[in-house]
Amino acid sequence: MWAGFISGVLIILGNPKAILFYMGVLPGFFDLTKVVPMDIIAIVVVSISIPLLGNLTLAIFVNKARAFLQPPRTVRRLNTVSGMLLIAVRLVIPFV
Image 1 (cartoon, rainbow, N blue to C red):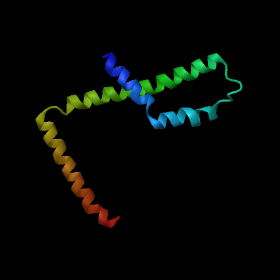
Image 2: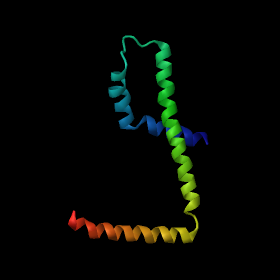
Image 3: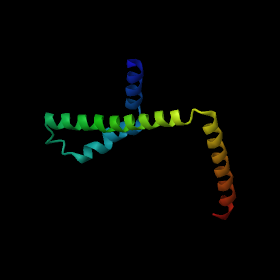
Image 4: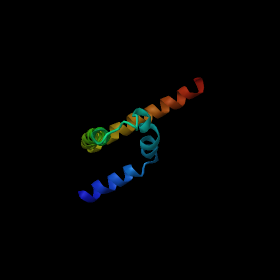
């Protein structure tokens, strides 16, 4: 369990968008000459908790979707509907 958690943290830390946000955009929200240690703690806590809650919510929904899509009948129905939608999109594209 910890190996998966650590690898997830390393992937997030290596995300170029996150690096650019924390180095480029985030300092624009704060006057860095007036930031005190309690402000830093608050920023870190919010910066950790919001993505964590979002990822946990996403994981819960993915788990529910996986459980819903396991029966072969459901997979067949999903494939049929997806195929029909792809055909419908193909038919609409020339007119757009």
